[in-house]
Amino acid sequence: MARGWPVAETAWARLNALGAAVRGAAATTGGWVARWLDGSVAVADIKHRGAWSLSLPAFCLAAPTQSNENVNPQVLKRICRELKKLVQSPPEHIKIHINEDDITDIQATITGPEGTPYEGGHFKMKIVLGDSFPSGPPKGFFLTKIFHPNVRPGSGAICVNTLKKDWKPEYGIEHVLTVCKCLLIQPNAESALNEEAGKMLLEAYEDFSTRAKMMTELWAKPKAGDKALLSSDDVMAAQTKRDLQDGAKPVSKKEKKQKKAAKKKASGLGRL
Image (tube, rainbow, N blue to C red; front, side):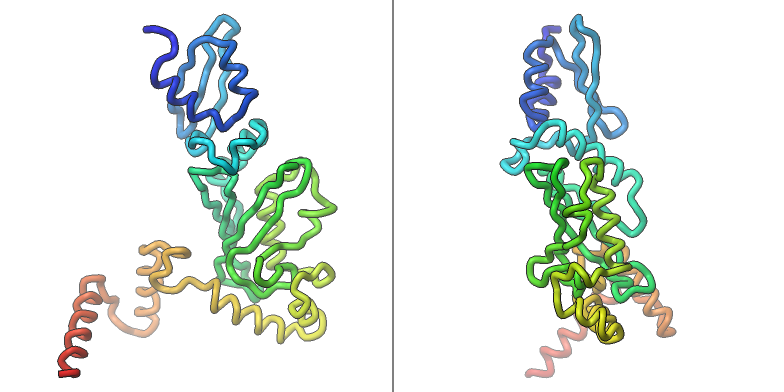
């Protein structure tokens, strides 16, 4: 078989996102072998210089996009490693969302910690990596509306020292997510982006707690049929739990559909 097998060429074409450094290495080597290994892809140079491998999660092989094509290849490799770890061993109450078309689009959902005004809420957030990352800090934004001293109303921008003066290059995505989760436990009124929330936190905590709970209930609590927060199985489980608590017999999907059709038919007859 000649050098430059089609499967290797395909894998290599998709690895262009790793940038000029890796492309340069490919130009000086011979054939490539790509194979799937436990959800990752190993690309090995099999020429005379010996074999080396680059193991990446499968989602790291997406074609480069306009937003990540100029990202340093070493930074992309680091992001891949961190995301793979977060998927395999997610931190408590944090769920990472992988964008297979753009791995630099980092989003996650944080479940509100117990004993806080945010308990039971599902808060979606986004981490934006700047051109200077990891030397410079990323930026964090809550996509779910939240009443919090350290979150700017409207934009959802997060203010925390870790993402400013206390940032260190060795900090990773997991550390940022954990810090943001801790903000839900212990808000900091001294660096408030929401002045009203910061003032209420210091002067009238009960009022602050009531307002934060109301916003959590309104914007962050899963509702039946809300696919953005819950799967259909989760919705059915929640409905069944409510039915049992009310002393009612759980209703199947088929029965619910029949009841809905009967109600619609009765409504139509009533207008005749």
